[in-house]
Figure 1 (cartoon, rainbow, N blue to C red):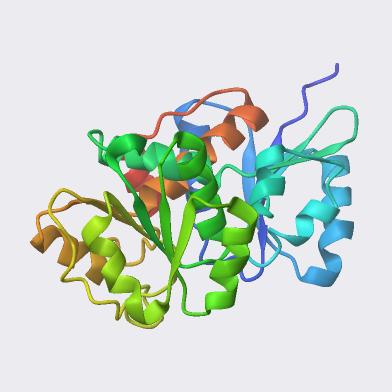
Figure 2 (tube, rainbow, N blue to C red):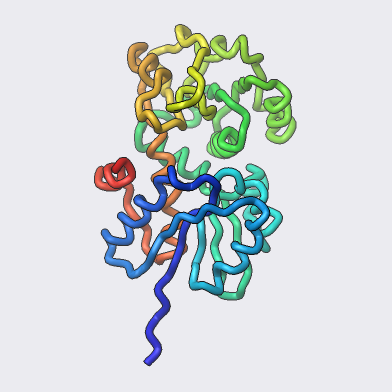
Length: 277
């Protein structure tokens, strides 16, 4: 009697103990009564390729990839989506039945879905977006905003050369501000996005002057520990619509779960509660 294989998925990074992805995916597996498992795996850089190529033989249908492997995984994958190439990083692997490893990036999708849910009146045509930071998360955010039709990205990063690189990759709709001038972007921004780790527990404070925030703006922070950062507190006081960063984590997981386990999960209150446990 041939019983069906139990599908396995997981998340690869180093460190990985802090990841909320296992409790999120386990919540969905339990909610939908799916026989499957989602496992956190601490994998160092020198073992990455060997581990990834071994996982399908062990019954894995795919994995999430997080820091510090999101860029390196592109050279290991057999197939890479256009958006993952554009962003320069992948966060989702699908192990196909033909043996090929397929890499995608769902961070931009997760960002936009979180924004639409938390600020339903925001539209890409609302006006320019001010983006703080120029790392991998910023690349995903900028790619998704430009693709959605935002007319201009005002970009500022502590190291200007990294912002210049993004401008050269994404083109003339990106305008750079020096970090000391970052506060000047806010008065003209319909959307303000913090993609840096500033404001996160254990990281530096956000020192960008926030008195330029206007109440018509939507302000979102990719940091979700704490859920309400100093940026979001200041934005609330200014009368802005605020969107916390947890929803991006939840929404970026939806397409991966659907591909691995064959069910498109809902992001609702119980999902948020499961991730915050």
